[in-house]
Length: 103
Image (cartoon, rainbow, N blue to C red):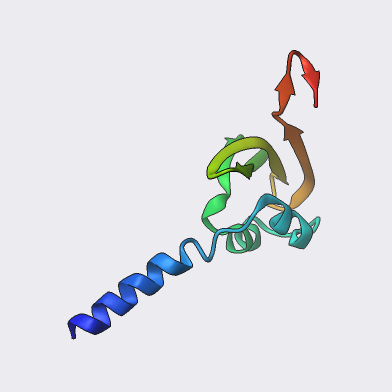
């Protein structure tokens, strides 16, 4: 019984966040007109609510880069939904700036 528990625990750790998707993966599969429910199923826990009003809802997925065992958020993709909960725009913002100039 204990061996089974340890195996399941190791399997869970090894798979990590198997349902987590990168911003570019989600953007490739998302389509204009998809519902928020479909988007949340596609994006999983990586999508975070950025803004919500009566007219629109925006979700954000951070773009994370890894450098020598360190990670940094270098930008984000934004998924815009209208008042009916349908995706109408995907855009992104680059956070990488150095001395006021883009690299």
